Length: 109
Image (cartoon, rainbow, N blue to C red):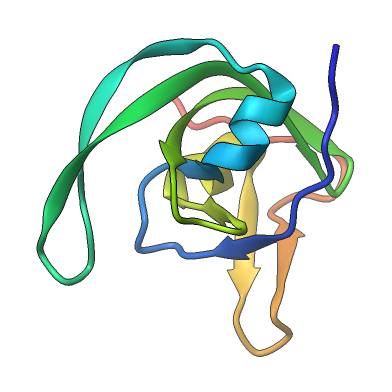
């Protein structure tokens, strides 16, 4: 098992976890497919998807898929990651806070 500590940017308007290609290569992540990615400026590109990425932050952890981005230098943390780990964005404090500090809460209807 390989590990990497990666700086990240939280963007609740983004959907998924995005990792720099250099990080994915260093970790030996398995590519499971391709996705079309739409960027904020409207252009699109085909990007590889890595599966089984174990992500840990703030005492919480999850296993997610990640878009692999050749030109990125930091991770991008999107809404799916925030939902999976049950974090809320504190914009004023520039931090992530757990919705419930004791446990992850999952919604079901």
